Length: 245
Length: 175
Image 1 (tube, one colour):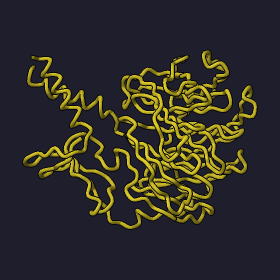
Image 2 (cartoon, helix red, strand yellow):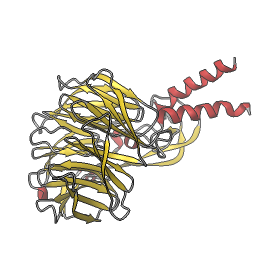
Image 3 (cartoon, each protein chain N blue to C red):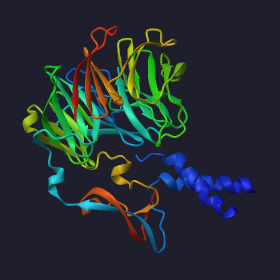
Image 4 (cartoon, rainbow over the protein chains, first blue to last red):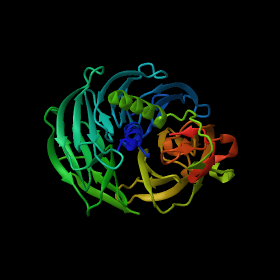
């Protein structure tokens, strides 16, 4: 028994530390899904690899210049810009950075949680984080978490909604779209302490992976294709097009 | 005593599990070795006719286009000028590509371990305008897909296009 003690501990330490095999708009800048590792805000490109946030000045696209590197945490996965902030999702939490000085992002607060996979989107005062379980993210609950970010230094959880297996998410005004396995759950989050489910979209058992609210269109990355919905009226969302691979 | 031993083990485990710093081993051991390619085509960023989607990746929207990554291959360009009839019009080849962001006429994506800036003003004839060498990789790039000893990446040997398991002599990297 004793001789397995060391390897077992080593394995556990390895699992916990390495368990990974793995926007707000600037004019002329596109919109990413919530699973992005690259994002552009103003004249800067921000990238996150597994643990480092790197900043590039892209004022002259022909001559991008690296400006800074910041260690965020282990197993970072996503980045989302909103106003003067970057919201970074990782397997151990959500991290908020201040980009008032865009060349030199500064960490403000963070909300830590158990190991999970967690894309994040945000608006003026709330960050929305979806946590899911899975092979890479074994300990997670499947849920949507809402954090009050009025104090960016210490975001506080204000609501939690159980989900089946949430992945990407997107927000348009006070309407939040959450990919949840074979459907998109549409929430009204005008009162973020009480998110209200107002609709659920599905299409022939396709799995919804990520979503981009893009003007009046909702672009959905689903298993085997792309779906486009008209979200002009969020009370009456209609399928516009279906691209099958 | 047992507890101290356990804590020590845990500590050691944490140190060597994520850090690529050398932990030399004497003799031969089975581990991971990078597969290099000198093929200059891998660094070519060019437009192509639409490709079939096999492994769909991340999505991005800009102007009247949706861009979708084809994991490790490049980017599909889909015209949504008429949202009811989206149409794939081109494919931008970039080996190893998994990420993308766009500002104005410029696409930023990864090409193996580099970040490239691509002029996409004409999606049918894109052009690389800048390249940041070894600027981006997730663990799949500079590190093997599994744990254990591995041969450290030597960029002078070419570009890493994959990993294979084999018998290594004195490997000095570990994760």
